[in-house]
Image 1 (cartoon, rainbow, N blue to C red):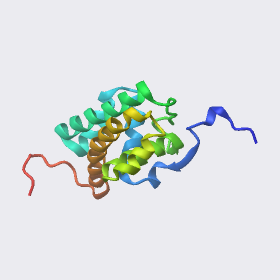
Image 2: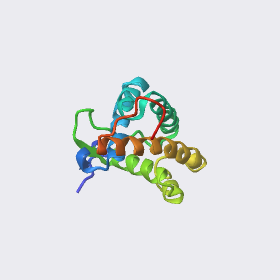
Image 3: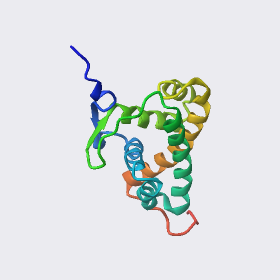
Image 4: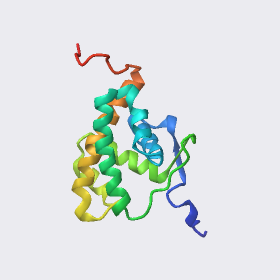
Length: 154
């Protein structure tokens, strides 16, 4: 069987509604990244609020900057409205959540599939910071808890 080079990375492996909420947000952020940082921030504002969305966007931008400059090959993505999750999208989402949950060695192993060795630590650190915010946003979406109106948390 001949491997279709056009499908590399885009082959559907899951669906958005089957992913954990944090992983689904990583995929959605990746897809919106094509439209620019403002599109990603708009996605995050309802669940993270202005300061959380900006902090998450900074970390996500750092991670994506490393990916755009040093990725082993460009990541394939599905369209924004598509409910499928491609293999590249799935591995990036898994990588970000693994980094966020503190599994540093596993995150570095996955990052080695994406970028060269000297960039593993910066990549994992950026993914960890973005992942912590996306994990929190995913939990809020799942529980339907919006960002509090004030900074005071009770």
